[in-house]
Length: 288
Image 1 (spheres, one colour):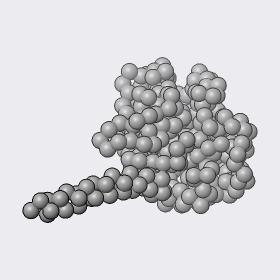
Image 2 (cartoon, helix red, strand yellow):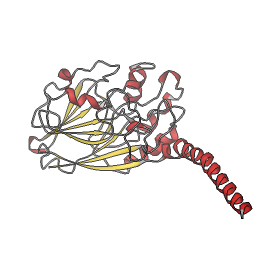
Image 3 (cartoon, rainbow, N blue to C red):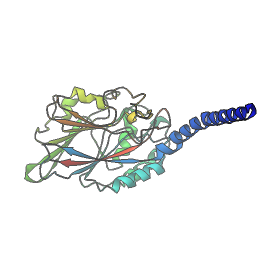
Image 4 (cartoon, one colour):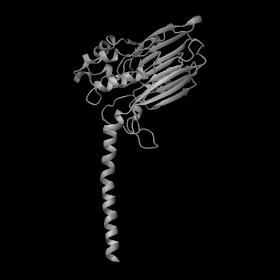
């Protein structure tokens, strides 16, 4: 009897040790090799009084934080472009951090032939992220976008006209961590009755823009924390992505009722892993 009990104890100990070794290896393998290559396509309806009948159903696709480099390849970028085009967007926006470190990236000239394949009826727009300003500076990023058919908004705005004098305004701010953001210049001549889309890399700056007519702010930067525990908030998010970390928020203490969406991004930075924070494409449909 004692011998059988000892055998059972040894078996349980072996199983326990096996799980103790295998589980961390499995988690690391998943977070390093599987989740970063997955892609979550999130469909979001944005309801606003600023959406007129002529803008009803307008579709905006946002992608962010590709961090091209050792851990996000040009082949992956091509796959991403194909997925975005499958959505038949009216507008495509990129909210910053294209290359992880442009000082050490040797394939810059191969980016624009891929991004050129993105198509949207009303154009493609982008802003600077902190990685686009740092590294080799703004020159590399702005040159890539110029050859990719994107309009780069740096403290500036454009207005898209529709029937019956309806308009959609797109405002782009420079990066708040390393750039020179100027909201007053960016919002110059934006009409309050226009549906106004704000592109700002860092989400927390929403708290600083209460006096400006924003209907929808799209941001990235946070990576959704990149690593999260199950049923728990992100372990870490970068500066200016502390209050708003991922998903949709409604902000009511601003000039207009404002929606803020924080995209988890596509690539990784610092650590080449994602856990419970899937790479994301956001698809917005405007509703009145």
